[in-house]
Amino acid sequence: MERITWDQYFMAQSHLLALRSTCTRLSVGATIVREKRIIAGGYNGSISGDDHCIDEGCYMRDNHCVRTIHAEINALLQCAKYGTPTNGADIYVTHFPCLQCSKAIIQSGIKNVYYANDYKNDPYAIELFEKAGVNVVHVPFNKGKIDFLQKEKYQLTNELLDKLRQAGINEEEMTSFEKRVKELFDI
Image 1 (cartoon, rainbow, N blue to C red):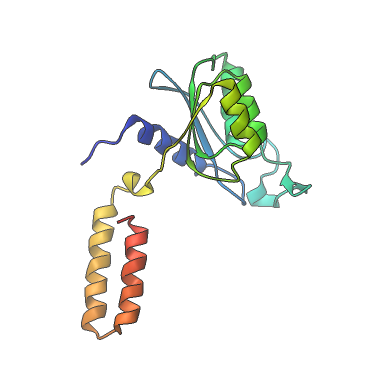
Image 2: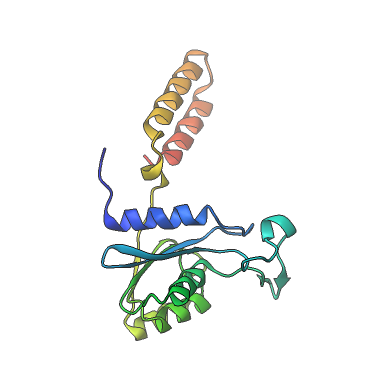
């Protein structure tokens, strides 16, 4: 098995945290790291004890769900709650931080932001990161790296494609299926 990089490792942690999200619009996870050690994690969801979007629906105001606390803020609040300093730390986020989270990240002293997916990348957030000297790095993340059955799934999929070809499916459909398999397995 190929060993993943530190960036991939911490990004995988953020993707796992995103699985705890209670937001129906977008699942986001964030991991705060100092010296290759995880110091906090967060996902987007409601405050403790309140209704969750997955149960009650989003509480919308001005096209934003006001019920949800963003993953980055939850991770930063975890540090504040337990007295863990964030100055000089790194944050790994599944999606580019929104403007409000970007400002909180800068104010907390985080020096490096690593994100996997572009998501409404706000030009002002980018400008603020640059002015504050915060390094922002896009870290593409292949979820297949944490799918321990990926090889078996790929093997089964290829066997099924072979069976379809033997059954006489037309070439145009076969090409379409093969293209989708390549996209699914990031080949």
